[in-house]
Length: 402
Ligand code: ACO
Image (tube, rainbow, N blue to C red; front, side):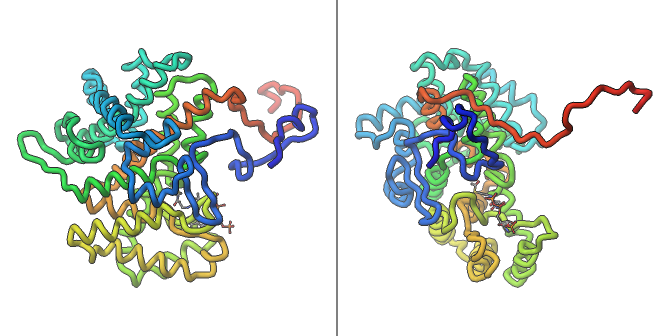
């Protein structure tokens, strides 16, 4: 590792690294990835152990504060989060300004950005108490906002949060309950939702997290920074891949059509890529994809739909790709988005809700990284340089001479 800053200050070095493939922009103690081994640790704990033994709010605590909570700390944290799950009543009117057919991610970018208008008493980043309240507010309210975006898009009334339910069950209820009708959250679906949330909670300096840090480096308030992260996440090369992946699996439709799509993915003249495959850092299995695959099997099995055709296509596609020289040589393995959409689809979510669910799950990671950044004395405003390749200096020509 070379610390370029000193060399740069002496005028000795200038690096060009589009896509930041080999440039660290910060030090961090939150998440560690070993891309060659396919290892992911949060504060040192392997994701597989957390997915099996922990639950989403405990992982939130771990990411935010650095240690697993004691029982008393967990109770207190849960109480603080559940106290903030409702959104300002005025926000209902704000939602109603959007077209009903808007993508829920479009609505979320707007609504989360507007949180600094509704909660301006927690936007002073110099005040540790306000920073803490903003963090809790976002973790608590993002499921409510995502569920509202969904309900609004299907023309149903908003469902208020119920704080006697756990985080995942409350979210499912806000999405699927209908007023005046009984709604019991299925514990299998609740556990699966909680696991999806855990698997998406943080992933070090990916594009959206780097966006949050860059926005925050100017001193912007945390709500504005998280809205910037949501906007970045939406792209199909990042969080939007879960929607794109399920749409691709449906388009493939049957296992006999897989070779056609594999051939397209290998064809350099065809922009098509296998969605849910490949990763900048993992050059081995994404450990989250392994847990997600197991979860898909469990959930669909328990729901009695293990013969789901999309799951069959996904498994066969994975098998064929992993034996194909193109994918082997480029070290392309399934990533977290490959199986998540199949579970969300089985739960009854439309594809347009897949990325909002990713966003609400990643919010804790974004906030933890933002908090770490603003308390790091070495952090300066992010200001990438460029390699200018345009015209050299030239004189202005009058319009009649052009
Ligand atoms: N299908 C086919 N070929 C691929 C794929 C793919 N999914 N991914 C990468 N490749 C090929 C590229 O064409 C390139 O080939 P080349 O060397 O012949 O030019 C090579 O593998 C390297 O690809 P890059 O795009 O340079 O790799 P990068 O690290 O920049 O991109 C990314 C990583 C964006 C994830 C890419 O693999 C991709 O587009 N995957 C599909 C989208 C996806 O699943 N995104 C989710 C990522 S995980 C997340 O954000 C939660």
